[in-house]
Each structure stands twice: as structure tokens, then as C-alpha cells.
Image 1 (spheres, rainbow, N blue to C red):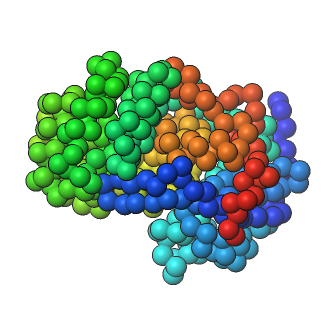
Image 2: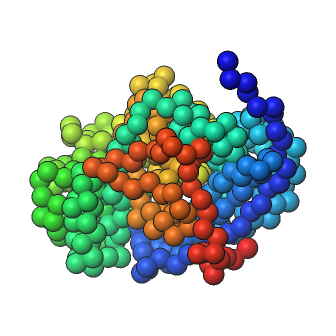
Length: 369
């Protein structure tokens, strides 16, 4: 019998923020942006280093350094979820959502990576891996793109063997049918087309758009036809959607209990969970357990390099998001990134932890905190 190493304790917590401009200004149905901030956390125990990250704001740096790190130092590196729930309890008066949840998520991912590295096993294995292939969909198709850029991006994913692609709609409803025609013509009939409105519609308008997308453009996935916070509206849309199109939402869930209303109201066909927002791997797996109970599928939102490992432990899994901005940033910031093969990501089983190695010198010029 192999001896379990003596329980080490967390000795240091370091945090930094990097604001990385997008290639061009981007927009969706309800928001515009020109940069994304990567918040990086590293925790150590002995010679081992665990790395976690989230996409949030540089204001999380003092939150982690001054409020969370003192609560993590000296804790067992073998018990990531115990530490995370303790952080949740201690942050009660701050409010465990928004930036606080994102900050806790980055710490949680770092702690899980540290535990896996200490154990000498891949993170997916540590989490109870039930699948080796994690299906993905290419995600981008921003409303700020020209027709040519939209077509090129979608075609690039299809040509790379990714059999599902997603585009944004909702900013200019009068122009969306034209953009949808370009998308369908570009990818052909064999590639599935997904759309994301980012909550741009009211429930009654959303029903019309869901029907149009399904009947005229063979769209198979409609994300956030109304805001994820409008559970009643989502249930209204889902009840009136035609067959063959999944209603998905939930990417803005900051805690596992956010999803209770989704499941009870039968508001979606697929719950989306962001491992870098929803209290990290601890929160992600808690939601996955609830989805198993309610017999509802789950998809991971963004951050594909971490999502792939977390999703490997999920039985009721839909394709996860291979988001353009995060794919670009993770490739810039880390060695060891997973590359799609035939439309799937396969967590590496020959390296401990999530296998990512931070390339500090490559992104130092973007550091803001």
C-alpha cells in the first residue's frame, strides 16, 4: 500500500492581475469591452506550487492579499473545499458574490491544483474523472465583428474539426437574420450553430427569436434569451420553445445555491457554470451534483483550460465553451495548454495538477496590480 504523504500546509499566497487588450473592440447583445483582466493566484506548500485564476478585476488583488490569504495560510493543502467553505463563512459581511466569489474561485482552483501536484496526479483524476474526452464548441462571433471576420472565425473552428460554433446576437435585431444567414452558409449543414443573446430580449420577444432561429437557421442552442436572473422569464421561453433547441443560462451564478431556482422552475435544458466564478472547483462540483439529482445537463462557461479538468468529473455534460478571448489569453499566459482534437479537449494524464505553467515574462507587460 502506497503511503500518503504527510499533510503539508499552505506557506504562501501570491496574487497578481494582468489587463490584456482584445484584438479589436468586442461586444455582445448587452455589453462592450476592449480588454480582459486575468487574476492569477499561486499557493505554495514546500516545493509545490498550485496555480489558479479567474477573469475579474484588479480590485480583487487587495481582497485576496489582505482578506483571503491570511485565512488560507497554515491550512492543510489536502483540503481545498474545507478552506473554500471557510472563506465563504468569513466573507459573509462582504457578500459572497461578484468579485468576492471570483476571488475565492481563483484561490480554490489554486488549492486544488496544489493538492493534485502534491499527490502527483492529474487534476481530473483527483476530482473523480468519469470521461476522457470533453466536447467543446467554438465561442465568439461578437456583434462587433464585420461579416468577413464573423465568417472567418466560424469557418476556422469548423475547419479545425470543432463541430459546434456559437455567435452573439441581440444588439441589432434588424441585422441579426443577415448575420445568421452568413453563419449558416459559412459552416454548412453538418456543423451545429449556437447563439447567445446575453439577456438582450424580454420573454415574449425571446420566444419569437427562439422560434426563428430554430426554424430558419437550424440553431440548436439558445443561450440567455433573457437575463439569467429572470428565472420566470427563462421558464416562460423554454416552455414555448420548439423541439430541437436547448435553452441554456447560468454563467453569472456566483454560488451553488444560485442554481436552485433554475432547477426548481425547470427554466433551462442546460445549466452553465463558470468554474472561475462559482466558488471554483468546489462550487462547480456542488452544482454538478444538484444537476445529477434534478436530471439536468451541465456545461462549463469559459476558462477552458480549467473547465476541461472540472468537466471531466461531470456525468451529465454538454459541450463546454471554447471562448475566443480566454483561449487567446490562456495560450499567452501558460505553457501546457490543451489543444482541441476532433472537437474535444483531453486533460493530460501525464502531468500533475492541471498541467499549466505560468509564463510570467510573457505577460509581465500587462500587469496592473
